[in-house]
Amino acid sequence: TESKYHRCGGNLKRRSTELGSAVTESSLTAVLPASTTVKKSIVLSSESRKELTEQAKVTKEERRAQIDGRYKYLISRLADGIDLSEQQVEEAIISDDKFQLIEQFFVSSGLKKLLFFYQDILQQKSNASLRSDASMNSLPQKKLFITMGSTENFTGTCAFFLRTSDEVITASNVSQEVNFGMFDCPSGNTLQGLEFFLSQIVIPALKSQQNWGAVKEGLKNSQIQDFLYAVDKFVGTLSSSSQNIEDKIQLTKVDIDIYVSNLQNPSDYITAG
Image (cartoon, rainbow, N blue to C red; front, side, top):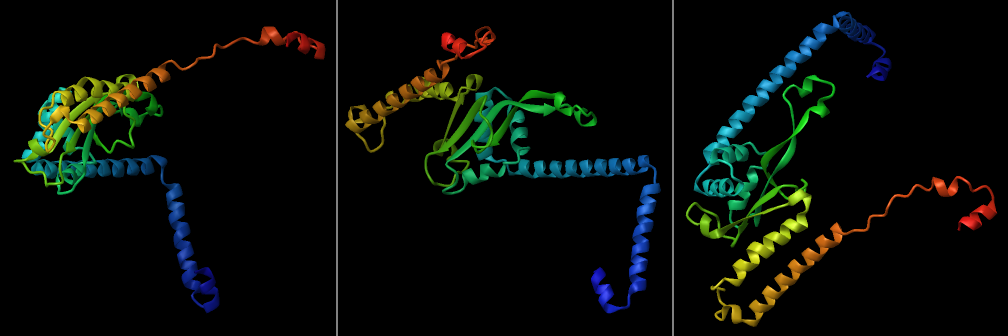
């Protein structure tokens, strides 16, 4: 812009006016008391927070209006499994930023799984933002939230819904088309939690299964037996992997000062060796 003014040869008066305006504005800002600037920022921040709160409230009510028999089925299963009230589960779901994943799970040929984690997360105290040591005011608090399973660390309880077909999920078929399950991750040990879930819940359920669909022979069928053997073998692999992790070698720390403090010349090193 400056070079343009020089090339035109005129408009120097306009440039001077703009420059003077900028200087005047800068001077006024510098003259204003710091408290005035801070106060303005606080007011704007407060207004912004109020607006965001109102928007969140509207969004939650819109989502609440979407809750039908399908959502209520999921909510009731979660409430029973995690030992929360249905109201608490509903509030957690409509407040979740991944709420749209539920609808993506319901549509025809939609998501094959829908995951929820219920575990401790760090929550800041309400007055933490007013202090410089806000990080010291974070407290672990149980929270139920929707997850893709790949972005958050799993440290608590996982509740999952699995589709059995690609049909659209409706209020009338949700109990037949959707399976529900849970498993825990004690002390952050995912392998141990998965091993317990498979060995104590899944395998006993499979071995007591009478109806295997098109396979009329049921458990006597060689393919069914091979399948159950493969699942048993996988659980055994989980168990050994978990054991190997727990029994990893821990080298004892040794104070080497007593061995090297008196080494003065090559012959001392040879003797020590």
